Image (tube, rainbow, N blue to C red; front, top):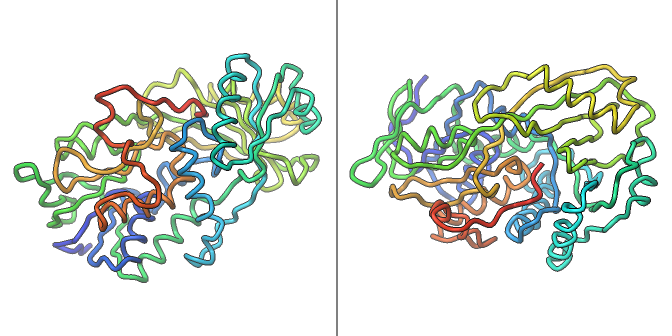
Length: 383
C-alpha cells in the first residue's frame, strides 16, 4: 500500500471526529490532508458501535451549546454533504426515581431553557401516561425534549469521508500508527507499518485509543476506554411508532425503537477500563432482567443482535480540544459517550482552530488539556 511521504496534516482516527475534521479542512481549501484509520472500515470504532442518540439535554452550558450547534448540522446533512443520515426526532425521555436526580435535573432544565432548549418537566403520572407499556410505578419525575432523537452513525461518517475524498483528502484503512516523530518540542512525522509521513501537524482523533497515541508523542492524555454494550430485539408490533428514547437514569438503562423492535442498553458501573469489545454475557443477563422489569413486553421478544463498544472517558466527562505541550500535536477526543452527536461541530471547530487560530463557532477554549491541572466542571447527565 503506497502512502504519501509528506502531508500538511495527518489525522489519526477515522471515526466521526477525524472524518468531519478532514471534510471541513478540505472544504476551506486545505490541501494534502491524510486520514489514517487503524480498522478495516471507517467509523467502526466508538462511532459505529454507539446507540445513535442525539440530544440537547445536558447538564453543562458547554455541552448544550455543542448540541445547539451540532444537531442542526445533522438535520441539514443531506443538503450539505449529500448523504441521508436517517435523522428522526423521536424525543428523549429521562425518567428519575431518586430525589437527588430530581434536584440535579431541575437545575439542568433551567439551564437548558435559558439557552433556548425547550425541554419539558414531567411528573410521575405524566410519565406513566406516556409510557403505558412500561412499569414505572416508582417514577417521580422526568424530562422530555421532542427535538432529541436518533441518526445513523455509519451514514454520517461515510458522508464525510466521501465528500472529503471528492475534495482530495487521502484516507487509508488498515493503517495503524506505530510511532510519532518529535524533534525538540515539535512533531515532525508519523510512522506506520507501510511507511513514514513527514508532517508538522498531527490531529489525534483516535477516541478510546487517543491516550496510546498521545504516549507516542510523549503527551499524557487522561482518556480511558470503558466498555458499553447493547442488544436489539426481534419485532415487537405493539411498540408505537412514536416511542421515545427512554432512559431510566438511576439504572443507566435505555430503550429506543430499532426497526420493528427495540435497542436496549445499560451501563455497567463496575466495568474496569480496557479495550475488550466482546459482549459480557453475564452482564447482558443483568441488562435483560432490568429491561424486562421495566418493560415486561421484552420477555416476548428474541435477541436479534448484540455488540459492545468503547466510551472514551475523561475525568469530567467533557471532551478535549486543541493544543498539547508538543507543538503541532492537537487533540479532539474524550467525548465520554457523546462524540457522535457532537462530531459535526467538533470537526468544524478543529478546522477553525487549525486555520484561524481560534474556535469561532462555539468557544470551547475551556475544554483544553491544561484544565485537568485545576478544578473540573463535571457533566452529570451521562448514561
